[in-house]
Amino acid sequence: MHDEEVEPDSEPFRIAYLVSHPIQYQAPLLRRLAAEPMIDLTVLFRSDITTRGFSDPEFGREIAWDTPLLEGYRYKFLPMVGPTDRVDLLYPLNYGIDAELASGEYEFLWVHGYALWFNWLALWRARRRGITTLLRDEATGISRPRAAWKRWAKRRLFSTLDKLVDGVLAIGSLNRAYYAENGIADGKVFDLGYTVDNAHFQTGAAAAVDRRDLLRESLGLEPDAPVILYASKLTRRKRADDLLAAYRELYELGPIEPMPYLLLVGDGDLADELQQEVLTSGLSRVRFLGFRNQSELPALYDLCDVFVLPSENEPWGLVVNEAMSVGRPVIVSDKVGSGADLVRHGETGFVFPVGDRAALRQALEAVLENSEQRARMGKAAAARMCDWDFERNVIDLVAALGELRRRRETPTLTASATKQENNA
Image 1 (tube, one colour):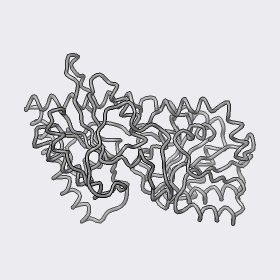
Image 2 (image 1 turned 180 degrees about the vertical axis):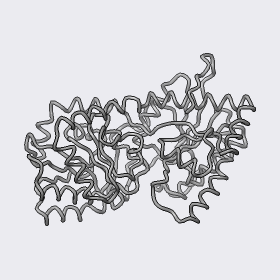
Image 3 (image 1 turned 60 degrees about the horizontal axis):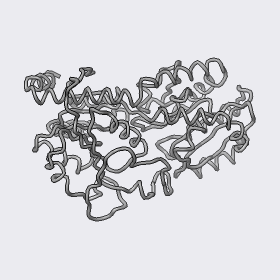
Image 4 (image 1 turned 90 degrees about the horizontal axis):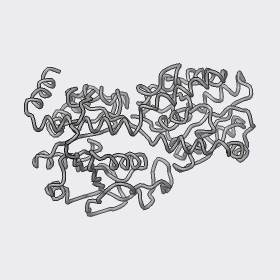
C-alpha cells in the first residue's frame, strides 16, 4: 500500500491513458477521474469500434451499448491504417503515438494491458522521452494452469517489461500476487481496484423496486419464489452449465419451498445446448432472457435473491461488483478473481471449487433456505462495496502518481524501490 498524501500546492498530474477502445465499464471511472482537480486526463483510444456497434464473438451477436462511452472526459483517437473492425493482438494498426508523447502534454503514460505490441511500443517511446510509465492489466495466477516452460517464459517477458514501467496498478490481491510471481518488486505495485459505477446500479435498483411485481409478472414468476440470477456470456469458460446442473439437483431433490427460479441472462455458443437441456429435463422455472444492456441490469439485480458466477477462467468478474453493490449475496467459483477480495465466505456469499456442482448446489441451499441469513449476507455485501468504489480509485491513483513523481524528482527514492526489487 502507498498512502502518501499529495502536497496541496502540487501541480495536477498530466496523464495519457492508452486503451484499445471505449469500454462500458471504464467510461464512468474515466468521467470521475477527469472531474478530479489533481488529475489532468487525456484518453488515447486505438479504435472506436464500440461506439459504432460491433460483433462480439462470445456473445454471438451485434452489441450496441446503451451507456455513454465518450462523455465527460477528454479523449483522442489515434490514427490507424488497415481494418477498422478488429481489436485483437495485431489490430488496429495505429501510428502517431510518438508524436503524441512528444507534444510535452504528458507527465505520465498509463497503458491498459501488457499483451498488445502497441502498448510495448508506447511504453518504450514514453521512457525514451522521460515520461513516467504505468501499467494496468487483469492477469492472475488462477486464470489457467501453465506448463513450467511457459511460466519461465512469462517471467522472462516480465523481466523486460519491468524495465519499461515505473509503476504497476493492481486490480486486486490476486493480480498483485501475479506481478510478484513474475518478478515485479512490491515497491512498484500500487492498488487500483477493479470497480464499477456503484451509484448507477444502486440508484437503478432502488428505482426498480416499485416495478418489481410487474417485472416478475412479465417473466412469469410466482410472487414469493426466490430468484437465482446469472448474467454473463453463455460460453464454456463461464460454466453456466454447472449452474444449470446444480439447479437441476435442487429441482429434483426439492429441499426448498417455494422452488426458486433461475434466470440466465446473456447469449453465447452454449445457449442452444442449455435450452435443450432445460426442455429435456422439464425445468419449468428456468428463464432465458438473452442479452440485456447496461440500463436493464439494475432491475434484474433488484429482482434476484442471489447472484452466481461459476466461471473457470475469470480474471475478475465485474458483475460480482454490480450484484454486491445493490445488496445481493453472491456465489462464485474459486477461479473468479474478485472472490479473493470481495466474497467473504459465509458472510457476503460463498466460494466453491470450480466444476464442483455438488458444492455449488450446497451453496445455493445455504443462501436460499434461510431468508434471514440471506438478508444479512446482502447487507454485508453492500457494506463491502462501500470502500470498493470510484472514490477509493481516485485516492489510490492520486497517491500512486504522487509517489512516482517524488521518486522521479528524488533519485534516492527510485534507488530504494530498485533495492526492494533486488532483494525480492
